[in-house]
Image: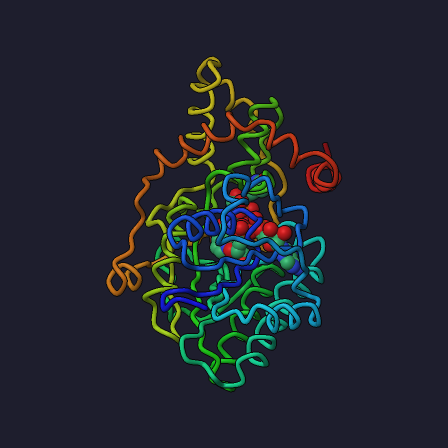
Length: 354
Ligand code: NAD
Ligand code: DAU
């Protein structure tokens, strides 16, 4: 018998970077919720990320691919999820350039399978139900030197990744309009922190500095990103899930813009300090390479809505967050070794040629 406060939440992509932080946060904070983590364990999913909570009574892991419509429907029928928090996705822009179809399959069709199963299960009995879709600021395209993305900025995606995420956002909204399915979408800026797969800028460069490998800076290094510590994103998702208004979008961001080259220089200085290397040593590894095709120039989130309406703001400043992140990677080099062996090496060779 469920208590009044209990919920059965399907969290997809919980073995990935953001998902694992969110699973940990919810499992610990809400012992009366059942958190069901559904993940296909692709190269980006890793159960080692959840070692510390895997025995928790309110946590269950299920290995399934969201592109498998039948299995997904069977799970919805068996568990009767009241809420879905959907993070599972192909998430790396460079991979979307070499294999766009994989992104359409998981990010668009996978999202549609979840929407259909949710709709089939509840058949318009929507009281206390919610489909919360986790999306990205990349759906808004690229900014020039000024301005911010707000919740009303028109979608203008430039990469196969952002096009697939934009499409999934549109389907979620369309199911809301057409079938009355209760939904919320949030669009977040670049996350960083522990457990991020070392294909993304910050962990890739930390790993390369440790290994004395080149730091491949795309183009002139002037592209700008707005960075948010991943635990702050998990807390924002918690806020939106519990207090957000159905049918609304919330932008989540760190008010924290850095050009890539400024960020890389800071990272190099911190790494020299942590590794007791002479000042300037890591910067010697910087190597300017061919730009990413369709490379968005600048992302910057106006997070006023979530701040004013829900009272959320980032709690970790960038210098602290970056130091925590570096310390974690230096302490967890075994994790790095494990995730960079095998398949990832083939990808690295294809992407960077060494
Ligand atoms: P990630 O790549 O680290 O993790 C993705 C997870 O999804 C992995 O555990 C993987 O195994 C799982 N997955 C992939 N395909 C699947 C499938 N077909 N079926 C089931 N599981 C599958 O991604 P992340 O960086 O943690 O991003 C999570 C979500 O947040 C994504 O939807 C992404 O678009 C969004 N997002 C990410 C960022 C960021 O900076 N990383 C920012 C904004 C939004
Ligand atoms: O904005 C949110 C998005 O942030 C998320 O939706 C994506 O899932 C996430 O991957 C991230 O996308 P980016 O493309 O911004 O992140 P990435 O870490 O790949 O790159 C950050 C910047 O660094 C970008 O301008 C490209 C540049 N870069 C990246 C890599 C991997 C380099 O210069 N060299 C590199 O080797």
